[in-house]
Image (cartoon, rainbow, N blue to C red; front, side, top):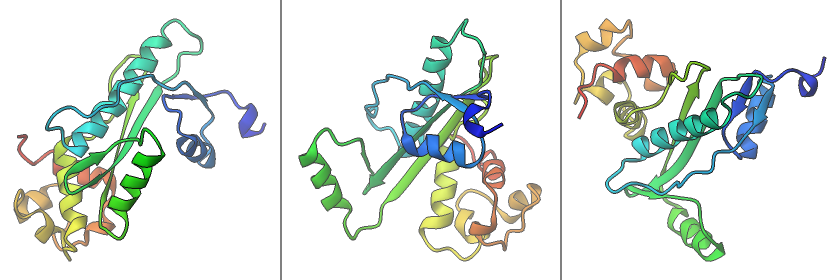
Length: 190
């Protein structure tokens, strides 16, 4: 049985051709049902909170629209954005706005933020990134810190890092996303 003829195991709440391609590449047969949402950024919303909110909102919207439809499938919502100088760059409305964005990004360091949310048939969020996770990952990779201990010292001491079974002297790029998530849970919420 080819992947194309396999029974879907997931509903992708996104119109992104790239996300669909990624799911096919890893062998996940799926349906595509994009969510129609207002994707404007809320006032004072951080990039991490923005993508987490949209990923979950997309999953919830498609999950609600699929009520009573067979087969009942988990719904995957995802969102990605780019930020520069603290400004979230949304989707360009036209060619002029696209040129402006590309000019702003050209030759400059910027950040790419992504979040994923999965709703099961029981409507429980399985995973969503919160601001603490985004802060931790940004700190670990943005300032070329050589060790995890140096990257997170503003939030966590050596004992806290070790309590997660992680070596404080480890390089951030060697950690798994689940390890970052465990550390993020130790950071006090704002």
